[in-house]
Length: 329
Ligand code: ASP
Image (tube, rainbow, N blue to C red):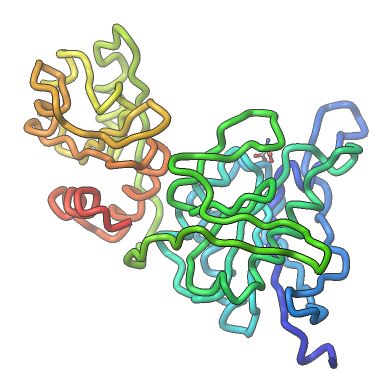
């Protein structure tokens, strides 16, 4: 097969541990290189052509929504230019936020897969090469088309909407309720890909900007709203990682009631919905009556990404409540 007719994979490198090595001066790990794919054969045995791109090379704690929007544009450009699949390598710390931003905004049927690594490239047990190979196979597989952006890590395939980082150091660093939607393994005849579920269809959002300032407040036993007024004074919207099904202490009720910006109630609990059921002051039902918006199943940092997108489209409080309440994400 001539190079021109080979299936083309675009790999967009952004940094993270998968691109890191120990700094020669002893300062710790820093992104320094691009992870490289060895010869890549698709599931049907064709040799793929790989194009590497690197819009930036950052540790993922330095990634902002503006970087995510750059990745959205670049991914769509690559798909429009004929790529059969797109892989994004990314630091694991904020990988789920970028994945969710792409889930909300990306418009392409092409397979798009994010991956990273927990161990750096100079370690004997580096997991980057395997994750990258898996991500490439998944992105190019015809069964991936139309599923929206996915995360591949440790052989598991995750929906961008539900995936979350669950361990700070383990190689199986990703999980999230209700778990993977597929798996990739390596059998005697190459990659064996199995899907168990299809991500929900969702609308594609096109924010005019991603500059909305949305802050997250984290609830704890005894929190009486310290820091709330300061955050509300400067933010365009707030997300609270609240307790259990979305409850807070009584002191938060009047504060939320007096806030004109959207206030989203997520939960600091690792799985399950926000359900406004409790009627004591500060209980979820009272917060809802005071105007707070439940985040459904989204964790606080994904609820923040959705709110940034919706504010960037100029939506008002009621429309925002409709998106969160209707599960349109
Ligand atoms: N620990 C992170 C990683 O896995 C660092 C980062 O997110 O850039 O890549």
